[in-house]
Length: 319
Image 1 (cartoon, rainbow, N blue to C red):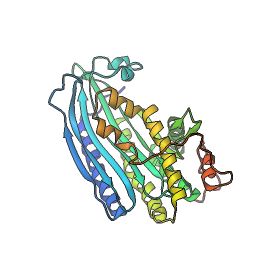
Image 2: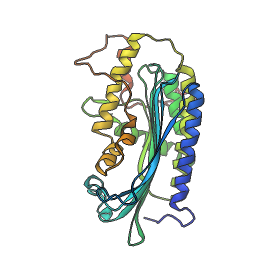
Image 3: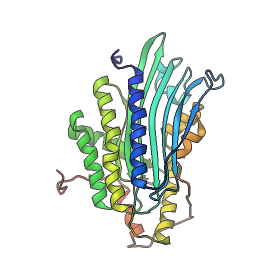
Image 4: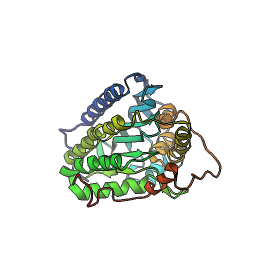
């Protein structure tokens, strides 16, 4: 595995990510038009002996907006000298290594049931032993979770994902990372995907310059993918029926994040900051025993979207 070039120190990635957080916050505040993000800047002690963690971050949360019921976007830059067993089981070279991880993660929960929930994450990890890099990689992606899906929105989302992959392997890169997203965001106990997918990648460690370029393309492409959907759906008329279905389906989001999400597990097991890790959870949610939508209803229609599908087939007008 090649080492990162000296011309790209870790702080170069960090600076990109803090700027990305700023740009996304500004764009979402403009789209909401009412509420603003409140920042909770946090920092660990210089040396936390109980967790061997150092560092800090900026957790920003927008609440009770005109468009977003809650929108959270966090930046973190943490380091340590001990990784949890879940992180080293398949990577023995990480045992005993010091490490540093930096990333931006967001989850937006809109008010309108016709406007999808969304998630995005971009991150970089590096581990060293005796001054030598023993591991580094990039990871990230974005995915979309509609409750009342529109084909127009889903195709736009995936066209944006496909197009940003162009300089980094084109259709092959899009197909591979779309498939990875479909497989990763799958609720095994429900036999359904969390939503309509997007892109997901991890352990990207081929060429540092190219991989960092792809990370930036994914980070910068998120707003291109999501904001047009916000403008189309934020004012769609809805009633209590749609609201209750939205709250019920948010339960699936909670189930995935607590049961399957690797980032949540790593953060909690490594002694990370709980409030920042769990900011992805929706402010309101409900579960209902044995719920089944009325056959032929708009609610029943969602099930057909919760399976992997080629959203950009030959009929896609954007091809």
